[in-house]
Each structure stands twice: as C-alpha cells, then as structure tokens.
Length: 166
Ligand code: URA
Image 1 (cartoon, helix red, strand yellow):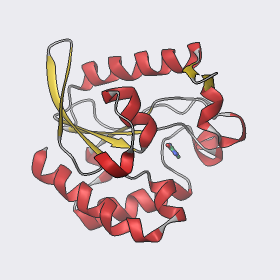
Image 2: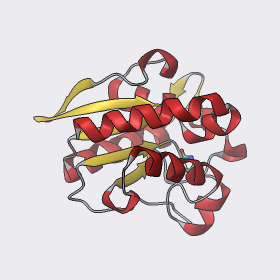
Image 3: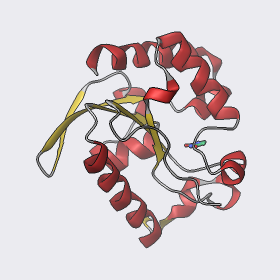
Image 4: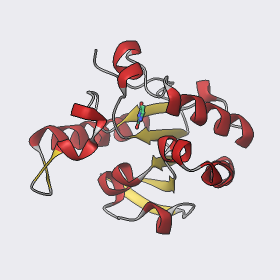
C-alpha cells in the first residue's frame, strides 16, 4: 500500500521522513512502526501533539531492502525519487507550514540541498519555495536514534526548538 501523509493541512509544523518501512507499507500511515514509537515518545517529551502535525515522507513506497539508496542511480536521484521530491514540494506549498522538520539526511538534502545531519541538526534554516518562506529544522531520524540511544535527548532538544519556532 502507498503510505500517504497524515495530519491537518492547516498544521504549523510539518514532519518529513524518508520512506515507509514494512509496517507503514501495511498501515499506509507514516511512522507507525518501530521508528514511529520513538518519534511518538520524543514528540511527547518535547510537548508536541502528534495529531496537530502534518506528517509525510519523501517517498510513498518502500525501497527494496529498506535501503533508501535504491532510489539513486549512480549517485543521482532516480526519476522516482525526483517525483517524490516534487510531490513533497507541492505538499509544502499546500500546507504552508511555518516549520518543516527534516528527519535525517535525505529530507535535509531534498528540501534544503545540504548534507550532514550531525552538522546541521538543531539549526534553524530559512527556506523559500515559490514565495512561501518557512524554517527548516533538521533533526536526527528516529530510526537512527533506535540504533544510537544517546541521540534520543538530542532529538527531544531539537523538537523543543520546533515548539519555540513554530
Ligand atoms: N521511516 C521513515 O522515514 N518514515 C516512515 O514513515 C517510517 C520509517
């Protein structure tokens, strides 16, 4: 099943992940598997209500072997990934959020064109898209936090910044 965005199109905050995993492929809803549980815990700790957020991914289909690199061909975005990025831009223009949270490297690259989540996480980046100005706050991807628990409080810290900047 395609995994499509959830949440109010009037949301002030938009969360952007990479692509659905096995659970999201079944439920059709972003962040409903293991990474979703971590995200939910971090949102709660930061004081953000999940139901108030618009939550989406760059891709609506699961990559082979859960490997996002499958969406690249010789280092360049595949036509499928280019379509995903174009759709994401349309979603940003539809929702017009004040803050977009880029969860991990891929959304950071897709939205701002920057690389290196460890370097950029917690920054407040000013972005514009066809006249709409918004902030992008990069944060660690919850699946990365699952592999490195030391990052959980850092994810919460960055989400608290989202609360202040929204
Ligand atoms: N990882 C993501 O990036 N998005 C999801 O929806 C689930 C896992």
